[in-house]
Length: 463
Image (cartoon, rainbow, N blue to C red; front, side):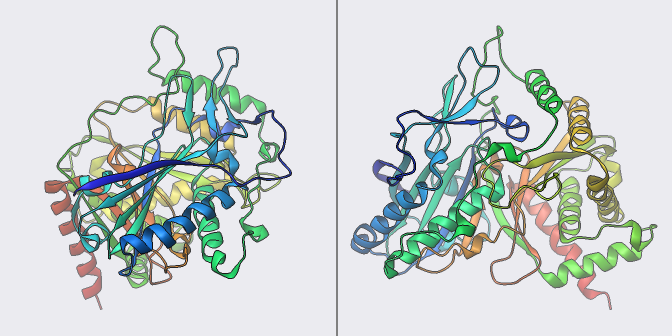
């Protein structure tokens, strides 16, 4: 792929009469935010097919609308323009937003085949890597959001983004994208405002947890840090070079697939149906997880760890509004098992039972207990532990992000190449089921696809 950077601009939030103080806005980090201080940025790319997107049309219509609407939406989401900062005298970092802060926007052009790059088939990961920006990171400060818009002349365009998890979780991330799309599409009707259900809530006092939780998380953060000589740093821990032979694919589980997998779990599990939590989340992740263990070689004695994030907005007292722009997720790990549990024909059902127990346990355990369990689990991780995690949710509604030129043709989390993870989203054209995004070495991917498709063929053939 040949990529040419056209320009790099800085987009300011549109003027807001309610924010006129020269003093910066300070957002303290809550207990939910602290876990993400040194996390690598989440990088995503969203593709829009538009055959009429000539260079002239792009630069005279598309780009000006995207830039103007970005400025307008940042009026409400202005913390995205800020920085995470850590002064030496402060015990923890904080988000600081000055009136002159901006979001970096890179404009680029690609000569690649849009249908190939934006498709769901096998593609080199390098084809997507160049479509997302990076964040600016130093030891005591990091930017929180950056964007890249890439034109594929006469084919379409894509929006790539890099965001720091410390500011918001996935709910807030998708809410911003949909709010930006809403304003952009409304510009043609002279509407430059957002309905109330897209306006974020920034109030950190909504997070009602015991102060003791924060001290535990700070202790955990120190325990796992890579700091040397006692020096604090905002830089993420090193993960090594990203492999150059990675390929990615987006696979789909239809609603019918999910229902048949549920029936298989009911039929083959030794547990009664009321003991199992057979949600789409459990079924999809159990199926993908069991296929991944086998695709990686299936060492019977190797320990494994599976992680997911549980949304706690409705689990706090009082509940946190859906429009809260911050983190309200707890990381959950499933540990204490060996790969032998997920091998063979019983692997899928075993994974269902493990995840079912985990999800059902969320309602009866408090946040502190869950956090302590997570810390204890991470301390048990050995160098040879097989780690997998899932990013995303089938409840986000990202495919509804129409900027005025139709809904996306595809959406990918590019940064799953930095750690052992896959993505899970709702399907574009069907309610129910899921899209699964994977990034693996070619040999492992071939094995995974074979296992994934064979399993679906088996359940489809059962009468």
